[in-house]
Amino acid sequence: MKQRINVVLREEPQEQRVIVAGWVRTRRDTGTFSFLEVNDGSCLANLQVIADSSLANYEEEIKRLNTGCSVIVTGVAKKSPAKGQNVEVHADTIEVVGWADPENYPLQKKRHSFEFLREISHLRPRTNALGAVARVRSRLAWAINSFFQERGFFQVHTPIITTSDCEGAGEMFQVTTAREAGAAKGTHEEFFGRKAGLTVSGQLQAEVYALALGNVYTFGPTFRAENSNTSRHLAEFWMIEPEMAFCDLACNMELATDMLKYVLSDVVENCSEDMALFDSFIEKGLLAKLRSVIEKDFAHLTYTEAVDKLIASKKKFEFPVKWGIDLQSEHERYLCEELFGCPLIVTDYPATIKPFYMRVNDDGKTVAAMDILVPGIGEIVGGSQREERYEVLERRMLEAGIELEEYRWYLDLRKYGSVPHAGYGLGFERLVQFVTGMANIREVIPFPRTPGFAPC
Ligand code: ATP
Ligand code: MG
Ligand code: MG
Ligand code: MG
Image (cartoon, rainbow, N blue to C red; front, side, top):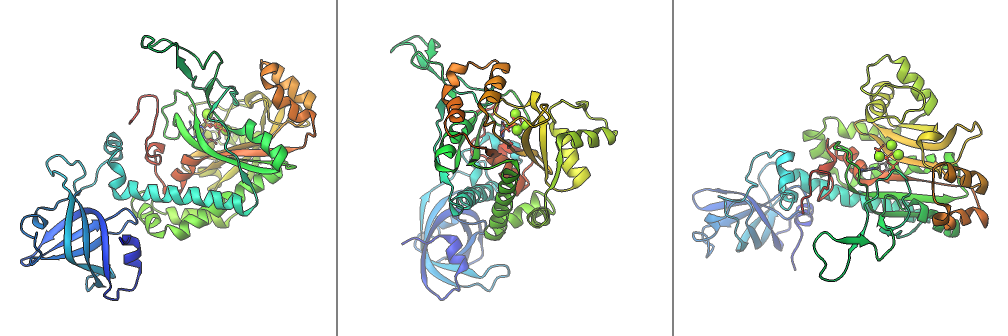
């Protein structure tokens, strides 16, 4: 039975037999034996394997092993005399499973730029940094599910192909079907005669289930046809969207704060080796920053207060600030990086810049919206209390030019047993960016898709 290298390295070596399988990172020869560093992706650390020249394939194969070759090693795990490692394996056999021609294999032992690695997204998870991102991303997904499941939320699988353009921002990819079998290339029609697109948010459908099951969440792929070449936007990303019945904006803010603190604590504790890599090589002081986010309260101010502070700062922004504008990344980052130095919740945005479903406040001008902004990125969470009053919602929809017939079902939720309810969307990749310190969102999703780029 094969063992994973993270388990072999963790256990106290008691001269037990092990079988490990992985990819060679380096080989170093001495007169009578060779040292191989083998990595199997289970952890950042490599396992040192000692191959004695008495092995049957030593001259023909082992001395030809180079970075990228795959091997299966059987041997004995022993306490290592070398510094910085507890265990080493003395090999009995090393089977070479696959060669990697050093002339062509692009991942030789040196530092590669993230731009270069993007061009080879089929090989980049074999590097230290991208391997660590993949493990941390997996753990974060697990922590998010545990957070909600422990609190009795039900996971709802909202549709990927849908007719409702929730954000109404014209960012929906259309789904088309070939007109007929054998149709000429490029002749497509609407989805079997009906307009359909890829989901921009599962929120409206999550509301349906919140108003039946109480507390629910979705965690799925989301698509936006926005032509933004920024370090925080993708055309395909993943979103976590909880939705709660009998909940107002304050309860929504509390849930989002608890969730962020929960998942950050989990990953700092359970991915310590990978997190130390990010702390040393990607963002100095990352761990201290995350610990302070876990421990301290988030700052809170209204949109109006935020705009006042931005104007008072007298800073020259590319996009000038006045009441009524949507906050841009430069404003968001100034607020949480320079003014507060911590995550910030901004609430009560102008109704004119927010979608129809957000609850109108008593002032008639603002809505019960909240964004959570974090240093280095800006917006990471966008949420709101939803408009539960039938007449107000209908008016807002008409003002937004929405075809009421298409949203009859959504209005119905306000007609039969309507309740105050609220929820938010957390962009999963923005969370992974914040946790790993990666500057560009393209590094935290396996196959990033952006306007000028499609890996496969
Ligand atoms: P932004 O202002 O950054 O464009 P948004 O306000 O359009 O974001 P929302 O509709 O509020 O985004 O979506 C909820 C969350 O989904 C955002 O807070 C963000 O974390 C994430 N998100 C939105 N658009 C993208 C995108 N194109 N790529 C990656 N994540 C995104
Ligand atoms: Mg946007
Ligand atoms: Mg926004
Ligand atoms: Mg938003």
